[in-house]
Amino acid sequence: MGEPALWRLKVRHYEVDSYGHVNHANYAHYFETARIEALESMGLSLAEMQRQRYLIFAADLSIKYRSPARASETLEIVTYIREVRGARSLWVQEIREAGSQRVVATAEVTGAFMTETGRPARAPHAFVEKLSALCVVGTPAPGASPAPETGGSRRWCVCRWFNEAA
Image 1 (spheres, helix red, strand yellow):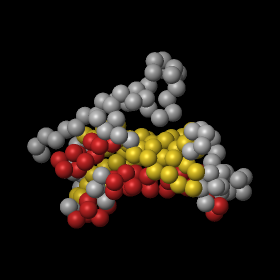
Image 2 (spheres, helix red, strand yellow):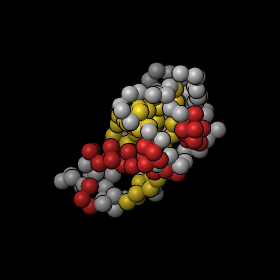
Image 3 (tube, helix red, strand yellow):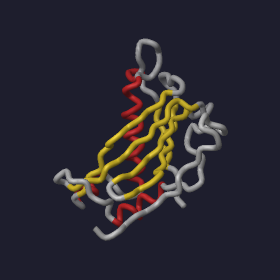
Protein backbone atom coordinates (compact mmCIF):
# COMPACT_ATOMS: atom_id res chain seq x y z
CA MET A 1 0.00 0.00 0.00
CA GLY A 2 1.34 3.40 -0.98
CA GLU A 3 1.19 6.91 0.37
CA PRO A 4 -0.36 10.00 -1.21
CA ALA A 5 1.98 12.73 -2.43
CA LEU A 6 1.66 16.19 -0.90
CA TRP A 7 2.84 19.38 -2.56
CA ARG A 8 2.42 22.90 -1.16
CA LEU A 9 2.36 26.28 -2.84
CA LYS A 10 1.62 29.85 -1.90
CA VAL A 11 -0.84 31.63 -4.20
CA ARG A 12 0.93 34.45 -6.04
CA HIS A 13 -0.80 37.79 -6.58
CA TYR A 14 -0.70 37.50 -10.39
CA GLU A 15 -2.74 34.25 -10.25
CA VAL A 16 -5.74 36.12 -8.83
CA ASP A 17 -8.51 37.58 -11.01
CA SER A 18 -10.50 40.80 -10.58
CA TYR A 19 -12.82 39.04 -8.08
CA GLY A 20 -9.87 38.38 -5.77
CA HIS A 21 -9.98 34.60 -6.44
CA VAL A 22 -7.43 32.37 -8.09
CA ASN A 23 -8.35 32.33 -11.77
CA HIS A 24 -9.85 28.96 -12.75
CA ALA A 25 -7.17 28.30 -15.40
CA ASN A 26 -4.42 28.27 -12.75
CA TYR A 27 -5.85 25.16 -11.08
CA ALA A 28 -4.90 23.02 -14.09
CA HIS A 29 -1.31 24.26 -13.65
CA TYR A 30 -1.39 23.51 -9.92
CA PHE A 31 -2.66 19.97 -10.50
CA GLU A 32 -0.15 19.27 -13.27
CA THR A 33 2.77 20.57 -11.24
CA ALA A 34 1.72 18.41 -8.28
CA ARG A 35 1.58 15.30 -10.53
CA ILE A 36 5.02 16.06 -11.97
CA GLU A 37 6.44 16.61 -8.48
CA ALA A 38 4.91 13.30 -7.36
CA LEU A 39 6.46 11.49 -10.34
CA GLU A 40 9.85 13.07 -9.65
CA SER A 41 9.70 12.05 -5.99
CA MET A 42 9.40 8.43 -7.17
CA GLY A 43 12.33 8.70 -9.57
CA LEU A 44 10.16 9.11 -12.66
CA SER A 45 10.97 12.58 -13.91
CA LEU A 46 9.70 13.49 -17.35
CA ALA A 47 13.33 13.52 -18.56
CA GLU A 48 13.90 10.00 -17.18
CA MET A 49 10.77 8.71 -18.92
CA GLN A 50 11.96 10.26 -22.19
CA ARG A 51 15.38 8.61 -21.79
CA GLN A 52 13.50 5.32 -21.59
CA ARG A 53 11.52 6.37 -24.70
CA TYR A 54 8.16 6.77 -22.97
CA LEU A 55 5.93 9.78 -22.42
CA ILE A 56 2.89 10.34 -20.22
CA PHE A 57 0.14 12.73 -21.28
CA ALA A 58 -3.02 13.98 -19.63
CA ALA A 59 -5.72 12.46 -21.86
CA ASP A 60 -8.64 13.72 -19.78
CA LEU A 61 -8.96 16.27 -16.97
CA SER A 62 -12.03 17.04 -14.90
CA ILE A 63 -11.87 19.78 -12.27
CA LYS A 64 -14.55 20.62 -9.70
CA TYR A 65 -14.23 24.02 -8.06
CA ARG A 66 -15.43 23.89 -4.45
CA SER A 67 -14.42 27.22 -2.89
CA PRO A 68 -12.19 30.13 -3.94
CA ALA A 69 -8.52 30.41 -3.08
CA ARG A 70 -7.04 33.87 -2.60
CA ALA A 71 -3.64 35.56 -2.89
CA SER A 72 -1.13 34.62 -0.19
CA GLU A 73 -3.03 31.51 0.93
CA THR A 74 -0.97 28.36 1.23
CA LEU A 75 -2.49 25.44 -0.63
CA GLU A 76 -1.83 21.72 -0.22
CA ILE A 77 -2.31 19.43 -3.19
CA VAL A 78 -2.78 15.75 -2.42
CA THR A 79 -2.20 13.31 -5.29
CA TYR A 80 -3.16 9.62 -5.47
CA ILE A 81 -3.22 7.04 -8.22
CA ARG A 82 -6.41 5.03 -8.37
CA GLU A 83 -5.36 2.55 -11.05
CA VAL A 84 -2.76 1.70 -13.66
CA ARG A 85 -3.96 -0.61 -16.38
CA GLY A 86 -2.28 -1.07 -19.73
CA ALA A 87 -1.49 2.35 -21.18
CA ARG A 88 -3.80 4.21 -18.80
CA SER A 89 -3.40 5.62 -15.31
CA LEU A 90 -6.16 7.23 -13.25
CA TRP A 91 -5.16 10.00 -10.85
CA VAL A 92 -7.27 11.80 -8.26
CA GLN A 93 -6.20 15.08 -6.67
CA GLU A 94 -7.47 17.51 -4.10
CA ILE A 95 -6.47 21.07 -3.24
CA ARG A 96 -7.06 22.29 0.32
CA GLU A 97 -6.25 25.55 2.02
CA ALA A 98 -3.46 24.51 4.39
CA GLY A 99 -4.66 26.23 7.57
CA SER A 100 -8.36 25.45 7.57
CA GLN A 101 -8.21 22.32 5.38
CA ARG A 102 -11.09 23.81 3.36
CA VAL A 103 -11.48 21.95 0.05
CA VAL A 104 -10.77 24.34 -2.80
CA ALA A 105 -10.87 22.04 -5.85
CA THR A 106 -10.73 18.37 -6.83
CA ALA A 107 -9.59 16.77 -10.06
CA GLU A 108 -9.63 13.42 -11.81
CA VAL A 109 -7.03 12.90 -14.50
CA THR A 110 -6.53 10.09 -16.99
CA GLY A 111 -2.89 9.74 -17.96
CA ALA A 112 -1.88 7.97 -21.16
CA PHE A 113 1.49 6.26 -21.61
CA MET A 114 2.91 6.51 -25.12
CA THR A 115 6.08 5.71 -26.96
CA GLU A 116 8.15 8.61 -28.22
CA THR A 117 6.45 8.10 -31.62
CA GLY A 118 3.03 8.81 -30.05
CA ARG A 119 1.67 5.25 -29.97
CA PRO A 120 -0.16 4.10 -26.83
CA ALA A 121 1.93 1.63 -24.84
CA ARG A 122 1.57 -0.36 -21.65
CA ALA A 123 3.31 1.23 -18.73
CA PRO A 124 6.68 -0.51 -18.35
CA HIS A 125 6.97 -2.83 -15.33
CA ALA A 126 9.60 -0.57 -13.72
CA PHE A 127 7.21 2.41 -14.01
CA VAL A 128 4.31 0.42 -12.54
CA GLU A 129 6.44 -0.59 -9.56
CA LYS A 130 7.35 3.04 -8.88
CA LEU A 131 3.80 4.29 -9.41
CA SER A 132 2.50 1.76 -6.87
CA ALA A 133 3.99 4.05 -4.19
CA LEU A 134 1.07 6.44 -4.89
CA CYS A 135 -1.67 3.79 -4.83
CA VAL A 136 -3.72 4.12 -1.67
CA VAL A 137 -6.13 1.25 -0.97
CA GLY A 138 -9.35 1.76 0.99
CA THR A 139 -8.98 5.51 1.40
CA PRO A 140 -12.06 7.71 0.92
CA ALA A 141 -11.92 9.60 -2.37
CA PRO A 142 -11.00 13.28 -1.92
CA GLY A 143 -14.09 15.40 -1.40
CA ALA A 144 -16.34 12.35 -1.00
CA SER A 145 -19.19 12.91 1.35
CA PRO A 146 -20.24 10.16 3.77
CA ALA A 147 -23.51 9.74 1.85
CA PRO A 148 -23.26 10.83 -1.80
CA GLU A 149 -26.40 11.14 -3.91
CA THR A 150 -25.90 7.66 -5.35
CA GLY A 151 -25.98 6.20 -1.82
CA GLY A 152 -23.26 4.62 0.25
CA SER A 153 -19.77 5.88 0.87
CA ARG A 154 -17.51 6.50 -2.14
CA ARG A 155 -14.27 4.58 -1.75
CA TRP A 156 -11.15 4.39 -3.83
CA CYS A 157 -10.89 1.44 -6.15
CA VAL A 158 -8.34 -1.16 -5.17
CA CYS A 159 -5.34 -0.58 -7.39
CA ARG A 160 -4.97 -3.22 -10.03
CA TRP A 161 -1.54 -3.57 -11.56
CA PHE A 162 -1.58 -5.42 -14.87
CA ASN A 163 1.68 -6.30 -16.53
CA GLU A 164 0.69 -8.92 -19.03
CA ALA A 165 2.99 -9.79 -21.90
CA ALA A 166 2.26 -7.70 -24.98
